[in-house]
Image (cartoon, rainbow, N blue to C red):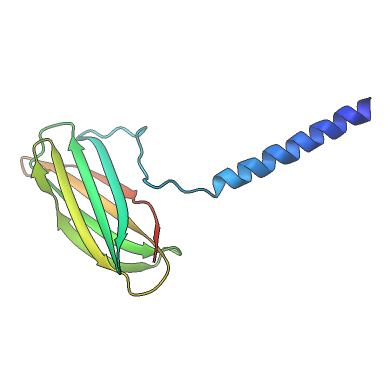
Amino acid sequence: MRKGIVLLLSLVMVFVMSAASFAADQEPAIIEDPIEEYSSVAGIDASLTRNGSAAISTIVVTEKVDLSSVKGTLTLVNSSGKKISSKNVTFTSHGTTFYNSTSFNLSKAGTYKVKFSITTYKGGAKKETINGNTNSIKK
């Protein structure tokens, strides 16, 4: 009886450990961080899509306070983290949101994502800088 219980517990542990390993390999389509609290931003939606041989980074910043501008640096990286291309961008204001859509050329097959660093401004003064990543895409 005792050996049966030990064997059953061992099998359950092996199953649970393999399921946890599988879950760690999964990557979400859109990376959002709803837990982190920002002082000037209510939320950031960042995504990367593919259109032929181009990667389109779309970032929408929803303001928490009345911002005067949002600027950022977008860096396209491959799966090993190597910088492929970088662009400085200015976001367009649309009411309480700021929007940016930037295209990157994908010259080689591989997996890519965009690392972003966004700086918010109020009355010309810097409020905060927020760093993050989009989802990954394959070419």
